[in-house]
Image 1 (cartoon, protein in one colour):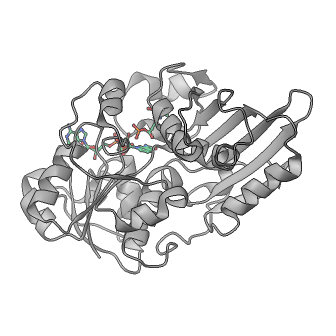
Image 2: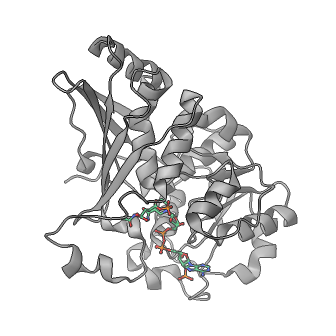
Amino acid sequence: MKISIVGATGYTGAELLRILVSHPAAEIQYITSESQPGTAINEIYPHFTRFYDKTLASLGDLDKIAADSDVIFIGLPHGHAMEVGRKATAINQKVKIIDLGADYRFRNPDVYEQWYKVPHTHREAQAVYGLTELNRSQVREATIVGNPGCYTTASILALAPLVKNKLVDLNSIVVDAKSGVSGAGRGLNLGSHFTEVFESVKAYNIAGHRHTPEIEAALAELAGKEIVISFTPHLIPMARGILSTCYARLIDGVSPETVDQAYHAMYNDEYFIRLLGRGGYPVTKNTRGTNFCDLGWHIDKRTGRVIAVAAIDNLVKGAAGQAVQNMNVMFNIDERAGLDNAPLYP
Ligand SMILES: NC(=O)C1=CN([C@@H]2O[C@H](COP(=O)(O)OP(=O)(O)OC[C@H]3O[C@@H](n4cnc5c(N)ncnc54)[C@H](OP(=O)(O)O)[C@@H]3O)[C@@H](O)[C@H]2O)C=CC1
Ligand SMILES: CC(=O)N[C@@H](CCC(=O)OP(=O)(O)O)C(=O)O
């Protein structure tokens, strides 16, 4: 596959490059930056020296990029990808688009406009939501994939078996999630300065984070009815990783074994989902640099709640890794291609 990465200077773009340079079936055509075109990527990211040192193009070359690529990955801030997707698919109707941002995640573009406060300029796109384990058959047929957000990937995977099998009160779901600072991207802002983040933990965007409608939409699809959740993200002093702790009230009479069966039935055959079982404690460090999602669940008999915990690497299963997993599905090759590396530990 001839692939291009738009926004290769960002954290997710660089992570795509790290994965795709070693992918057995991918050949990198173009990587882009709007602020530093003409610069070699290893001048911006010295860790790529001797590994990948090609020069950045820009979106001014979109005609060539679209014509010469089988797949374009987009790692831009939301609001920019839909124009790239619209133009690229007009230039080359065969090109596949995998957007790591939010522009193509919502089946209903009105929901996107309501939460992201920008007009959707590619409303006619027939995009598929790329949570691979849940939507594999649709991803296989897709031209445009809206790759899920990082918090959303962990939270949806943790809750899906409970919601799909209606084992919990669908109005009782609470998600409490923590992210490393790379989740905020490479751009400079006060909130991600070392001195602001180190030795500190904070909640942010309570009752208003943009991943809330994304989690609700995916769970509603599984449940066949609208779902409203409470979601609180936290920023914690580490570079990579997300831990999502999800609470829901069990329906009366649902046994712990029924909960176990739901997780095993949904994920036993999923290579990238590692079930730690009932009582298991996922740890972000065990997923670092990999496309794995580690899942554990607990039954609190005292409160009648089930508490499911998921750990992922936000840049891999939460972004670039899942994007490559989706590409592998779209091209009908081994889903693990390029993604079968051991975790980086400690
Ligand atoms: N970080 C994460 O863990 C995750 C991020 N995402 C999403 O992926 C996308 C990329 O995120 P991330 O890599 O973290 O972001 P970064 O801030 O690290 O990188 C952003 C990229 O977009 C480019 N860019 C910035 N502004 C513009 C613009 N106005 N026009 C064109 N290009 C622009 C930058 O290129 P340059 O400055 O060189 O021009 C850079 O390559 C976002 O939509 C984000 O929400 C999704 C899941 C997880
Ligand atoms: C720590 C941190 O700031 N994380 C980001 C989420 C990153 C992500 O997945 O965002 P998109 O849905 O926009 O792609 C945030 O809370 O906005």
